[in-house]
Length: 360
Image 1 (cartoon, helix red, strand yellow):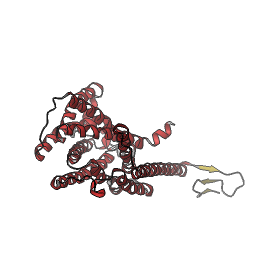
Image 2 (cartoon, rainbow, N blue to C red):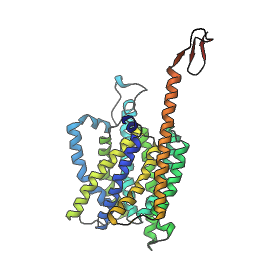
Image 3 (cartoon, one colour):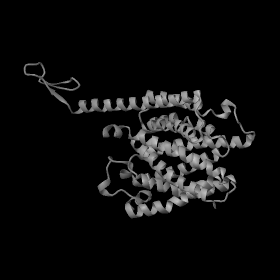
Image 4 (cartoon, one colour):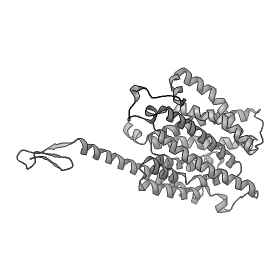
């Protein structure tokens, strides 16, 4: 059982992140309906989390702060081509942690700003092509395997998302007449797609070395810096936070954001970019199920078909690709380390596992 959990840990953590982000998006939309601007929601959430998280790291793992210092140099004992990027080139790893944090912060601002201008279903539709883009980029730049099953699942799930969310710009229902606002919203959603795609590639390049908690802290710190700039650049109107329901929503956002970010970091440290991205499609059927439970609006036939397609193709691709990798590892281990002794009198006394002759 533990070996199965370990094998699929990346996908399982991606499912955890999908669930938390689904609830988080609903809470964030509720805050914006109460008058808060997107940048204001992000700033308030980070403001309440950074001091507590910094104190926790300082008391429990103060040495991990060094992972954020781009001046860190490799000691003579650590000089090696083996190990993680953090061990081999800690200065580069620190810079990439901050780059990733800026990308994630900007992406969150773009996502919330897009949700404020177009329907969330339209944002999800634009975002649904991310899995294939991540798989291709990780294959090109990081030489990660992007198997044919994952490619099929990425494309199929992307189309299935359209059946589930039924965006107004395709199905023609409830489209706002404010075309300028909708155009801006779609531009924000496209920028969000590009930024978050690059962010996952950076995460995969960083590898398993950086501490997930310290990476989450770096992301929240950049949120405090990026969100005010976003508020000023877009001319957002600020709302009042002097309401206990808004304060409660911000606390919930802070908790969910912390869990979701750490889950994403851990998932990308343990699974390939394509695997994690395909697993993250689960956010779409989870959102529909949560809506059905709390709003009492059951999914339609097309939505059920789309959700079944996402779950079916996602599970099939992730399980099949994982089994194929495990079989390849076992075959490689046998070829590298195994020798088989033949009975006396046979033509060959010893042959390698691959069949090449060693002795007569």
